[in-house]
Amino acid sequence: MKGEFFAIEEVKALELIERTGRMVPAHIGDAMKKTVEIKRIEDASELELMTDWMFDWWGKRENYSREAVRCCMEHSLKREGLPQTYGLYLDGRLIGMYQFTCADLFVRPDIYPWLANVYIDEAHRCKGYGRLLLASVRSSAAEAGLTELYLFTEHGGLYEKFGWEFVEHIDTHLEPRMQRLYRLKIR
Image: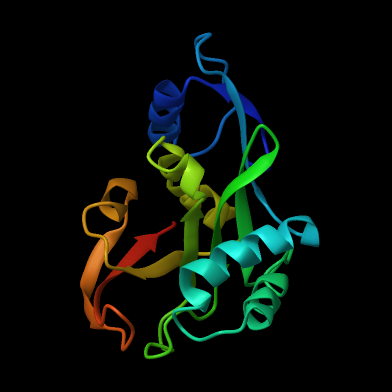
């Protein structure tokens, strides 16, 4: 992966990424070519956009100030160790992200690391970019030296497509309270 660029015809690129399990340079077809890159974000160039996304998504609902969410995002811009943030860029513009974190669910400090803040900008949803993002998680986690990841979500049937195994229903003490806990084995 390592920040490689590739031009894609979206459907065929998704099939290629899912088959190989990692991002690869590819020039497929002539229609709908886009330059897509998934890379670790290590500087503050995207900090305000990521802060806006997370504040609007969960910050307001969980009563965090924008400044607190910004601080969380700022301290996730690391080259090594956790947390780490990865961005999905379309023609050089950030349109999505995810993070590897030490903690994501207050009531379960016993399990870590976590895949958190999986997000696609609203204007780019339902176009296959979420699948591109999720298809890159395993290789990014391997590069980060992780052997497994956890996530909690209310969505069923999505993460299984990317190798995640359902562990149990879990009381998050958030809204919605009952959500699904998943594990992804990296190696």
